[in-house]
Length: 117
Image (cartoon, rainbow, N blue to C red):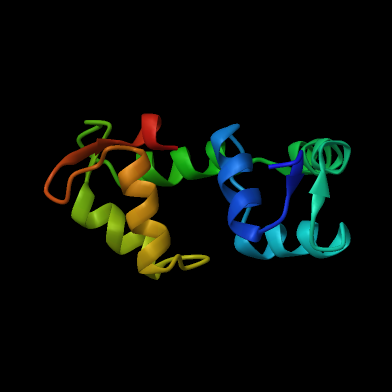
C-alpha cells in the first residue's frame, strides 16, 4: 500500500507477524510518535526500538509453564481465550478471534503454548 502503514491494525499485524508482541499501548505510542502513518524507514525505527524492550515471549512462556503442572506444553483454546480476554492487557473478542483464526486454533482444540507465543 504505497509503502506506508496507515492504520493501527496494519502496524499490529505487521509487527506481530514479524515475531514482536507489542501491547496496544505501545502500538498507539509508536503510531502517534510517527504522526499516524509510517514509512518503511519509520517502521524500521519502531522495530529497532521495540526489539530493545521486548522480553515478552520469555515472560509469557514462564507464566504458561508455571500453570502447566503436568508439563504437557498444552492449553485448551477455551482457557487461552479466557486469559487473553481477562488478564493483563485485555484483548477484545475481535482481537482474540483474529489471533485464533491466524493461528488456526479451533474453539475446542488444544494449543501448544510455545508455538502460540
